Length: 227
Ligand SMILES: O=C[C@H](O)[C@H](O)[C@H](O)COP(=O)(O)O
Image 1 (tube, rainbow, N blue to C red):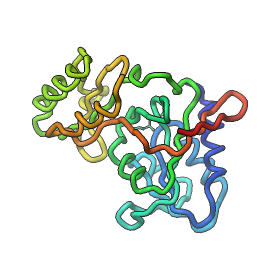
Image 2: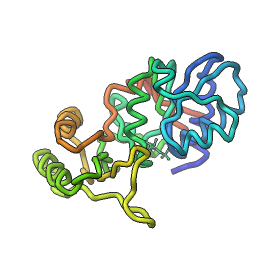
Image 3: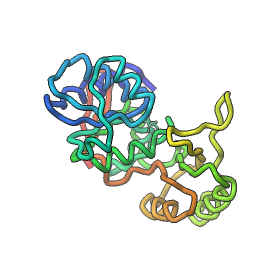
């Protein structure tokens, strides 16, 4: 994990934004560099749709004009971080528990750019635990159904309820997160489909066919990847 690389990726991404755009603001440490660089550009007539309360707070503090997905349902460009960037720009996201709002904003966007430091680029997704957002009501029963689906994908470890120092982590929408230690995800499309069919699962952190471009931060500059 390199802060310098994240900064480079965030700054390069901010340069892609044009005046008058509606911009989706991602969540996490890399996205925060982007938000700071975007605010520093002082572009006219931007409207920004944040993907989390944390990003909304940061953007507001920096003087960016905020909007909501309800008021601006068509976003020109979303820029967001990722936990893993795999082949074809298949991603794992949700390490910061913002996956649901992120996916809603990504899917409403004409173009999405993922930004990450070079350590996030992998040959096979799955070393980073896959976040699965679950309705809090009866979440342990949902976890049993998740375990069955994971077993069907030869993933033996049951997903683990995400906890922080202050107790069970709640998302901005009030849901809980289970992290599935997959090791390697051999068929991300089938796993994504199977997880979506589980009652109680709200969303998962597999972002497939959503990123149009990746800007990968290096120690000196950036590398640009396409699907
Ligand atoms: O829920 C959080 C998001 O998906 C983040 O974009 C992701 O976890 C990457 O965060 P970071 O840039 O801090 O590694």
